[in-house]
Length: 338
Length: 190
Picture 1: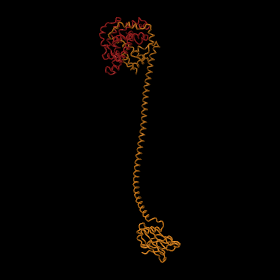
Picture 2: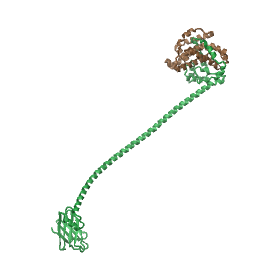
Picture 3: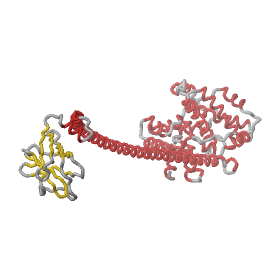
């Protein structure tokens, strides 16, 4: 408060109309030694003290004086009693006059400044505590907000992680689905292949049964004997040419298995560097295979698989250089009779 | 009027002086106490406390702060308003409101036998000065003085702006000071 404001509050103080804080402010100002305010207050206090004179006087009860005189403890000197009076904690309206003491009594006059100083300290302490409290609460609130923010960030990060995981798992799921589709395709393909294999197996079984029908031919002779019992086997007789008049042979052809058997007898030994070659002749000769005759051999069996044999009209065996030739070049030894 | 030397004698334990002090001040203090408390019994109790306190604390009186009667009036008013507030905080209402007092006032119209002519002149001067105040200023001052209300409380009570109330009190006190200047300048007031 400025001095003007304090000075203006003097009449209000005298009338007893100030708030406690304003009252204490003015009293502190008076204690600081402001002569003009002190003088003004003394005037106004004097005027205020006159106000009850405007009331119609009411006589005191007769017994009151006696009671008061009796209650007063004559043994206790007023000055001593005053020193024993406890110091009031705060200033009240009118206490300026009631509590302030003349400067000539330093021990007493020091009590109000002390009280006011204490009050000032108290105000500072309370203010400080309030400020500290507010600041503490604010810092607690700030710290709470920061914790919440940190927590929020963590949660957001966790959410992002979870979303990433979900994305990853969605991708993995799509991949698995693709794989499943692929494997389903492969499985159906395998099923097709299996069906084909089963068909092949069935074929093989049929062939096996035929072979078992063909018997357990362990030797060419046995096989020939078995062949002779199979129906639909084409048989061709071969006779010796001028090169070997004693020679003879016959040829068996199974159209179903496309196998050819040549059984030759009394062919002369094939000299070194030469080989016998069997030909099937339609429009031109086609080599069926080669074979050799050693010294002392009289018979030989040639077994070959031959394709497109059915149209051949003539069969012949010629002596050719080793390894055979695409076309017959040497002398004919055996020839079919067509 | 009370001579400051009377208080000096009381401070020395002079019971005769104390008795004189009572005779010269009790009517004024009792009137004030009844006005504030609105109750004679309680005013009488209050006066017992006040005089006991005066007896104990008279040595604290500083003539530099004010006249002896101003000191006594201030002390009585302060203690009466203390009681008023304590009573308000207990939710107590006066059983004998102030309005019930006029008969007592009429029944006791005469001046105290101890009252001097100067005292009577002063009483008339104060009565005139207060009566001459505008009603609003008188009301505001009396609410503060006799009911212990602060300017904020008066503003709320009267439903008036705080500044208006402050101004009324300041103006009223200033007018009283002007009207009673000759009495205030008198060294022995009252």
